[in-house]
Length: 328
Image (cartoon, rainbow, N blue to C red):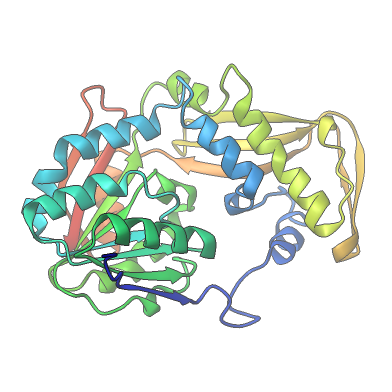
């Protein structure tokens, strides 16, 4: 007899016309600034997501496999220390690393509920049904939502809550935005909840830069793909082959920047916005920042958000960290 799956999915990603910034709004805002820029979320259309999956398998891209190794090594300890009965994952994606934590919670006999949060309805439904089938004694409450805007729609905690925010995604937020986001997250943890934060660490800049400018050129394709997105979705006429991928480590700010550099003077029209732009030769469009952390920066960001660092778990080479924090 087939098990009855306890799955609920709510949609909150398009609550109102003013609540959600669209691609068009981001382009109009970002490409009319003195330093042209776009938020990195627009890199992840279907093709971009496929390319990023390929990046995660590259030898230069240590982040994904290192974070997974840390979780595999410390998942049982994390579950024992938190006593978590539910897991709320922000930006669930394909949730491959989530299984490590769910397995540890199931083995400990504490697993009651999984709450995947992602802007993609397809993703939320897929992981909700997959994990509900794999863990039949667990309920699933999925949210189709932007975790930067819709955290108030999370269900009340069912008990001690564990909130993984993995993949180094926190580093894509500028410092002020990062602290505001963490501050908004703190009340959602509940009195007994914990945040599990994945952060890339400061290290040899050559190692960092290689991870964002691989020898096979996959990251370059991933970065350039955003111009195809603008051409397709907004009727732009970017000459994609006239741009090149640039990635460098800013040693002062301790973050990586990905940019697209125009290799010649160009005039671009974006029909959907009735917008015309000029690019000078070698002018750059910033598409991503990815901050790297020291323990001191991590503690400071958490403290500014009313959180305290409980423990930092890292790998033997100290490339990446997964940190446990709670409300101070």
